[in-house]
Amino acid sequence: MIGTKRQRKRGVWEISVEHGRDALGKRRRRSRTVHGTKADADRTQREMVAEAERVRTQDPSDTETRVLIADWVRDWLKSPAMSEKAITTLERYADNAERHVLPYAGAIPLRDLSLRHIREMERGMLEGRLSGRPVGNRSLQIAHRILAGACEMAVEMEHLDRNLMSSVRAPRCRSDEVIPPEAKVVQQLLKLARREAHRLFAYIYLLTYTGLRRGEGMALTWENVNLDLGNIFVAATVVKTKKGLMSQRPKTRRAVRTIDLDPGTIEVLKEHRARQIELGISGGRNGLVFPDGLGEWMKPTTMDRDLKQLASRVGAVGLTFHCFRHFHATMLLQAGQSVVVVSQRLGHADPSITLRIYGHVLTGWQKGAAQAFAEAMEDAA
Image 1 (cartoon, one colour):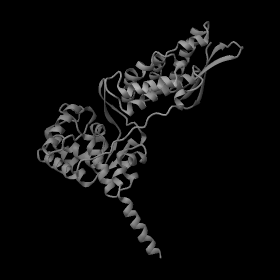
Image 2 (cartoon, one colour):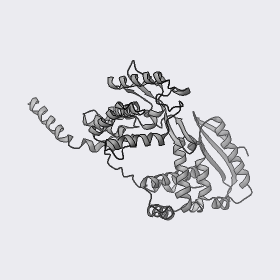
Image 3 (cartoon, helix red, strand yellow):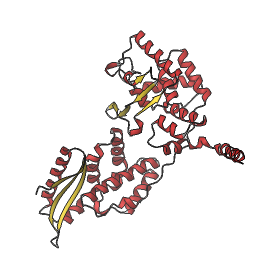
Image 4 (cartoon, helix red, strand yellow):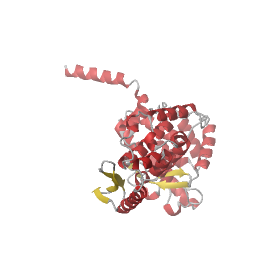
């Protein structure tokens, strides 16, 4: 019993293993699609063959009845398809599974999962029965994705006939309206940081004038800064994981991007570089633009503390680094820049994301459009 392996396309393999015959003499085969290398496919094939050997002398339906959702979800989280996800996504899914999905559904046999179980999990999460406080729709959506992914893998391996979750609608995430800081407050903050030669001045300035994400600014290296052409290349982001800080490629293809700089920002970066050289500050082995005193990534907790202190002095309570990104996008849209251009600068996967987050700042623009159309019709008369 060795099974078969077929390459469907580059990086995608189909593994099939026979599980004997059913009561009617029909061959039972289980297949699974593997995304990864040939080594990943070979490993999966060996695992499937071993599983087939274990159940060969048992009643297949009895074995499948005993498979619990807890075991299946944990296997799905370790599957090759999930290994392609960012480490922060994997940690978020694993945490959600252990805190929400498995306490409600983990002890249920895979084949017995029903809509009643799913609704019970939803109610429990929304009421905060286990955590002591209600969870948001975002956590509920992730719980749905976990069960959907695990069930899909079960369908591929013929443990289930269909994916129940495909007919269950997950709740929509309600996006709160983004309220960016006022331009006056941002200007005051930048003036204060410049006047005091604050170590975060150039960093905050760059986030304000480019819309960079916090982690993208932390990961920026001088190798990816071209002051002659006046642009920066975003190739990495720093994320906080359970094992500490680490650098990774941005999640989406569009997040890897080149951002043009205005003359003022170019000058700020030149001054920042000259000051680093004067003070003998090293960018470490990675040539970081904004390192700490040891040439490593700045510590987020220290950065938060410093920003909080600066913000309090200009009356901007609650200001975060992400607020500068919102500020940049809002100012561009209000200045008449297209959603497509703003989306490209922000590195959103699609302009529709930009429109969904910042569409409220376009309120009232229809009057201008109506007037422009009327004037165009008069000119054409």
